[in-house]
Amino acid sequence: MALSLHFGATVWNMDWAVRFFMTIWKQGAAHMQFEVGSTVYIVESNRIVSEVTVVKRSGDFYTVRFGENGGIQVRGSRLYATQEDAEASLAKNKRDKIRYSSPYDY
Figure (cartoon, rainbow, N blue to C red):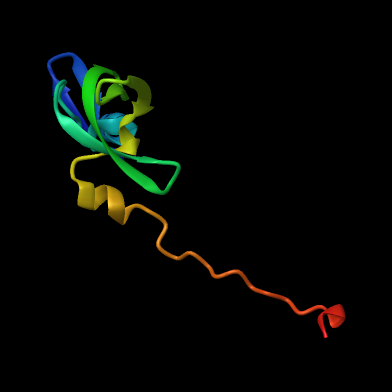
């Protein structure tokens, strides 16, 4: 059952409004947004946590600078507010290499 609101001659369909706002929310309104000049952390190669500075923001993309050397452009989902958050996102379960014995090893 669809709900609708009547304002004068305009009818607002509530199902449409809910779908519209849920789409906007899923597209990044729920992600943390960082200000230009703030210090954030990024995980490099899924093993190194580095401190970077936000230089520019364009939509969901951020340009970050590594110290004085250089910078890259990344999505906001790759940035973390604290070093602990970045370290928590690293892969924790590193499987030990399984060694198989060959009959020729004896």
